Image (cartoon, rainbow, N blue to C red):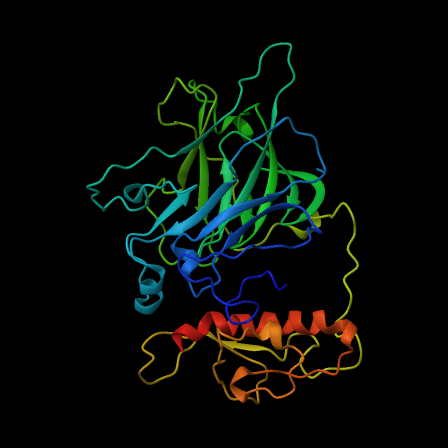
Length: 370
């Protein structure tokens, strides 16, 4: 937890030109990502993939590197977008590449637009087994839940976040903000149901990142979701003519939980470890208000987090020179630090601190707008 990087909570901010070396024990494995914890900085691109290798729940032949990172993107800063309620010239990026004119056909672009991000499979050969590729799918977006699919290719889902699961097949997967899925894709394109989605002659296929209905405010232009290309021959650089699967849902619904079976069952302990708690029960005592203060100087919505309905909202004070994590044994706390004492033993401080972090880190995230 002390390596989670929340400035003022678990560590001091990393100063410009300085560095911080992260050291932690790896207890899980799979696909993940790192990102800035300073305000909304990660939405401006301060992110990257992180892979921890381990056993797989199904067999595959080759890994597609780097992982596929989906994100929404605006042509103004995330800080400005939060303050003005407007993400200018919205777009979708796949591994840093996008086409704002595809997302919004009414926009005229005056700069060079790169071709969509592409990956290459080896075309199946007679007498040889079909090659299987492992893809890591990561959603690092600011406000978008994506539905990922590849025309004419089924996905075999083998892990969700850091949890290896029993494999299941799907034509698409819904990936929420921060979520990661590992999927196996066979180099064996198939025709859709009843002849829909026929195979294109050039064997170039669209990789699609559709916006789900979760947070969509305004849909993009037709074909906006064509953000990547799967090719079987790099010498054929034509844009794909493949058709989207006919049965892909975009409703705001997570992957069917009946499909998500961990290889090893988890025994999740109840919290708290000892005794009753006013705050650590079912979560019903926590409340969030997305409405900002009614009067200036706060002209924009404010995400507010409080520890009880009878407690007035008060923003947390974070001292960058004295991270909370280094003062867990303190007895005298400033009221603005919003500390909730619990009668835990010294052996269970990690749980206390973890829940404290979950609450306070969110306030640390929002305090810059309060």
